[in-house]
Image (cartoon, rainbow, N blue to C red):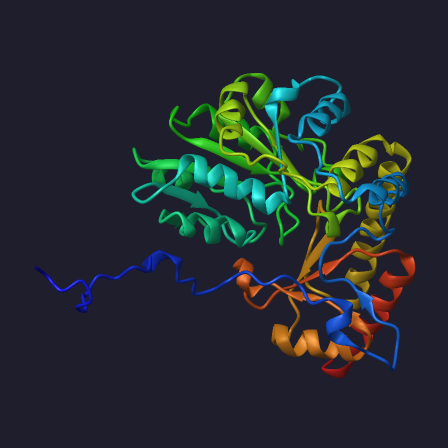
Length: 375
């Protein structure tokens, strides 16, 4: 009889889980621990005016019953989402999860495994390739076109084969702030084979004001193989609650619902999300502030001589004339937190979140000092 304790050469570890470049979220204010000056956090694309007051009140009320389990399903939030979208989409076309990142995990788990392929376009959100790698998938990068980060439709289509399952695009794109015009999406979607799904990450869509900007809604309504990803972290100011959702065709949504866990959202997040969707006053105030401050920052950055790209998001991508880490440290010394984005596929670049006027003026003052030091 073979010795059950004898050593073997069986490798129990999945090689594709060894991540070379893991995603790291931006630093918190607590990590900086600056006692000498006020610190402005313009590094994580957070809401500049806080969280929805209605959502805060809903969380406070729900906190009295933490001993009770939450709803078994996300049904109430899906009902609220259908209402928010003016019933252009049905309740069963929405899938809710703990953050936009977890919605990506659900989609990738549902459609990808070893032998499958996906397409990304850097610079972009690192999570797409990270989670796809967890499933053993092959990732193809079709970079955005210079100098304005446009989607290379022909190159994407050239990469599609029988093993391709998902294409990840973001509009407005993080970290570039660029967007995908509707005509470009029309051209791509019409030419995709039926076994390929386009995942359109649109978590910053509220802030876009370009005339030819579009969400995934018209494509989903037309029955196209498209998924629109969204989050409550930005416009609604609920980053700490970790609520995300996507919408798609009934067939795709029904399929992915099969791998959703019971009690998928905690009670506080569920109530916060429902209340936030109803807080139209807060949503409007957030969007108006971001769009106003974005125009202001575009103008002032030009005056300073900062190399930047016009944005459709609540952030602006810049390219300082010194290394991104040195630039980050200089800005930090002046009380402003910014985010180097080499890990997003944009080496040498730094992303600056739009704050309120006080924060933005502090950022501009710091930029003037930094740029003056090597003028």
